Each structure stands twice: as C-alpha cells, then as structure tokens.
Image (cartoon, rainbow, N blue to C red; front, side, top):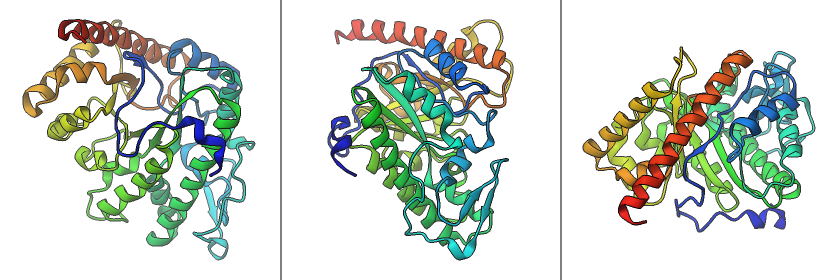
Length: 350
C-alpha cells in the first residue's frame, strides 16, 4: 500500500481508543433500495453524523456480501444471481485480484456514496466482507478448506487495501470507520466448522490489523457467538445485536472498554415488529447495561459514552417503508444515548 492512505492513520497499534462523537447512529450493511441515489439520500438523512456506505442487493445480486468479496478473484465468476462459478484449475491463493477497483456492478452503492460524501470532513463508515465468512462460502461452493481460506484471506486483504486507497483519493478529509462483517464467526466453535476457532480469529485479526493504521476498525457479527473469542481479533468497535448473549462476555467487555474500545449496539430489531415508540427497546438496552455492570464489572459511564446505536442487521429483506421505520428508531435511540452520555459525563465531571 502506498503513501496515499497515510493521512487516515487511526493511532498506535493495539490502542483501542476511538476518537468519535458520542451518541452516534449508523447503519449495518444492505438496504432494500434499487436506486442508488435514493439509498444514499436515505443514509444521509437518517444517519448524518456517521453515514454508512450501502450495498444494494435488491438492485443487483452482485452487491451481496459474498458476491462483492468474490469480484475479481482469479478463477471465480460471479453470476447474475450472485452465485459463484469456480474454475478449480484457475484458482491461485497467491494471485492478486484481477480487478481491485470498484467500477463494476458489485459496487454501485459504494460509488454513489463516495460521490455524495466527497467533501465530507466528518466520519464515514464502510463495510468489508470478512475472510472467514468468504472462506466458508468458498468451501461450501466446493473448494477444499485450506485452499478456500487462503484464497479468502488474500482477496479480502487486497480489497481492504484497494478500499483504503479509493477513499484516500476520493474522500481525503474524512475520518474512516471500517467494519469487517463476519457473520460466519458465530459458528466458529461448532465442531464441524471448516477451520479451527483460533485460526479463524487470526484471519479476521489480520484484516483488522491491516486496516487499523488508517481507519477505526469494527467487527460485526449478527448472531450468537463466543464474544470473548471475537474480541481477541482486536477490533476498535465490537458490533452485535443486543439479543445475542453479549452478557455472557461481560468479563471480557469490561477490559475492552477500559482500553477504550466501543460497542455498536444493534438495539433495533430487524426480524420482527417494532411497535410505535422506542421505550421498550431503550428499557431492553438499559437492562443489558445493568447486567454487564453487575455481572462483569463493566463501567456504566463507558457503556454509554463508548457506544453507538445500529439496527441489528442489514435491511435488504425489508421494504423501504419498513427500513424507514427501523432507521427512525435507530436515530431516536441514539438521541437517548446522547442525552445519557452527556448526563453521566456531567455527573462524573468529565
């Protein structure tokens, strides 16, 4: 990677401290829109303080997370429906991406977003399919386990470098927040998982480490997981739904917060009705915080000041009206978070 990304330096290696405003709302992954300009308008309207680049698989299945990861990988063809055709003879785990740019049909949402925020000086959020999740998909498509994860690791690191260079050139003033999306890590402890749990964490950690000199890094997993294990990958921000057992990791979250780590609380469900107010969701989040304080010794101030609010997962399977409802609730919860963060800071004299 060349000098073009140097200005995005996020801090010394191993430092989890995140220099972001408190009380942020942001998005997770996909949106249901088919018009990229409408999707970007949605993002900027609902999450203006930390807008996130959308993927638009409803517009093209090539914008699905696996299809995006596979674009440009030698020996793999991404079909119109987002499925992969693999030429075993052409697969080379050491080969560079045949196309490491973002001009293809797989990245229309990203391009529209970058164009819209080109003058932005505040933070922006991007997402990247993780190597474990991509490797699991390649293994399921027929590649032997070792080869699948070697290909995935090489491809995801190359994509990370290309993304940083794109953003350095197109959005040079912005503060970068890059989440590595690893839904497959939730199954890493399952006996028949195609790679050992520590090997899986090493793969994800390698991508986070490559991003960290230039961006604030996040690790997103949308299902139950061994959260202590995921924290060992070394993200600046842990992103997860509030309903997937984070209380089981209270003793691991406490030192993570003490080191300056943040949590992106997926407090707005994307798999059921929401109701008419955010009161119930706020009570659930507050109860989770109380559990983390009493059971694991988490600092109640840090839980509120080193935090942001997101939907639980992406919104591709929702209608646009449903997505508006989820995004509105995300913003309202973030407003409550901001009020509490300001209140606790005043109480402790920060």
